[in-house]
Image (cartoon, rainbow, N blue to C red; front, top):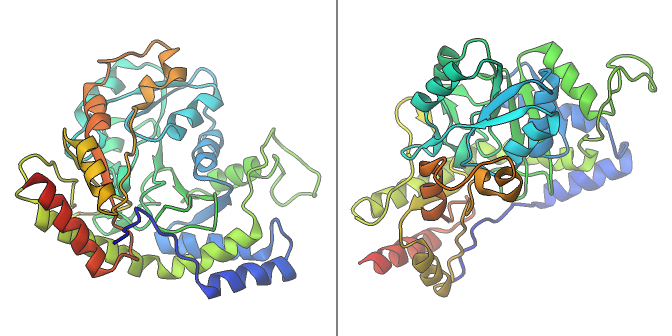
Amino acid sequence: MDVPLALPAMTEKMRSEADRVLNDEFFLRGETVGTFESEFAKFVEAEHAVAVSSGTQAIHLSLKAAGIGEGDTVITTPATFIATANSIQRTGAEVKFVDVDLDTYTIDLEKLETAVEEIENLSAIIPVDLYGYPVDIEKIRNIAPDATIISDACQAHGASIRGKKVGTMADLTAFSFYPSKNMTVGGDGGMITTNSRELSEAARSFADVGRSIGEGEYEHERIGYTARMDTYKAAIGKEQLKHLPEWNERRTDIAEKYTSAFDTLDEVDLPPSGNEEITPAWYFYVIRTNRRDELSEYLENKGIETGVHYPTPVHLQPPYRDLGYEEGDFPRSEQWANEVLSLPVHPHLTDEQVNHVISNVNSFFN
């Protein structure tokens, strides 16, 4: 039995909508882009949404819209995909890492509090909702009330805290529509959400070559980028969004089955499952075990695809080693990188496939 780690959906309706806009609308800045933005903003209960070309650009342009640049310092975690830190670097700001809490895979709030006290020119914090587990933004605001908070929710479409969807609690929130994510646009794509009109207009301008909002076609108020979303991708995303709630429900159902089945495995640390306040989006079901590589090979031989997200913490990647980071700087992130293994949890798994994963993980450890 083959069990893929991710399986993006592409229905006939999604294909037909993409074909329709290719025939009826401009390839760029077509009206469907605006429709997708409005519907995504409504879904996360934000005032504004700006569609962009990737999740990386969503983070980068959020920083630019917030005025982050040279002379600023931005905190994030090394337990993330490198794009989070790279986006900070691209603004000219300085990256400062804070280690993670292994119970949540997200930024350690006690260590964050210490870092905030030590950094004089702190301008922004980018918490990462890793694997779809949302960071409590209210707690970060209490720790750093003067910092801009930009949520890296590239893996957290539909996650919520105390009934509020991820996408409204931070000053700006960045989402990714990369094909393996909870929803996609048929390729790279991203979205920025915010409740600030000023920040949304700045982000939109930066994404559209610095074009002035509401002015002439060739009026440019800033040095911008070419980071718009293609119209056909917005058409696909608009249709995918309709299915996101049911897809996330299925992810939760599978995750709960895994947690129940693996709860007694002594050699496995299970991912955070949320509680009465926190609802994860379950991008992947990520366990930790010091037998990670053995387990991965065993499952591969059983037809079960797994992944390691991510095998090297950002501070140990070559560009960041060049900044002076080295082994031992962030021990929890280093332990995380050595132990994590992603199991399939996408909504297109059959019950038979889910049981196949459960059976073989249990067989390996027992």
